[in-house]
Length: 167
Image (tube, rainbow, N blue to C red; front, side, top):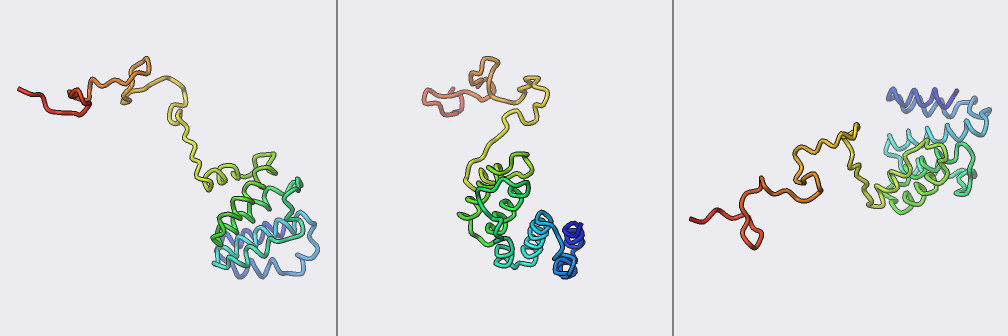
C-alpha cells in the first residue's frame, strides 16, 4: 500500500512529501515486490525533480537482472530504461527497453513500442480510421484495382510534368 500512497503524493505534485513517505520506517517492512514498486515510484519522482542520476541509481537493485522473469521484472526494466533515457543514455535505454519487452509476457508495458520508437522504426497502421474495413477510399489517388488514378491531376507532358495545355 505504501508505494501507492507515495505515488499519490507524487501525482498531487507533493514530491518532497512523497520522498519522506518513501523513507518512512514502514518502508523497511515491505515485501520484495512492494520494495521494487516503491523504487520504481521514487525513481519517477527523481526524474520529475530533474535528478536523473539519482533516478538511475535508485533502480540499480540486485533484482535488476536482465534474465529475470519475475512478475515485477518488466516494470523494473522499463522504469530503468526510462531513467536512462532521461539521463540521455539512449543506448542503455534501448538495451533495457529490450529486456523489458522480453520480460513483459502480459503486455503490461509499451516496451516494444518504445524500443521501436527509439530504434527509429516507425510502424503505421494503414487501416487507421477504417475500423469497419468498409473499403472507403474516397480522396485517395488509386482506382479500385490499385492502379494510380490521375484523372484529377491535370494534363501531363510526355516527361510526366504537369504542364499547361498548349494552344
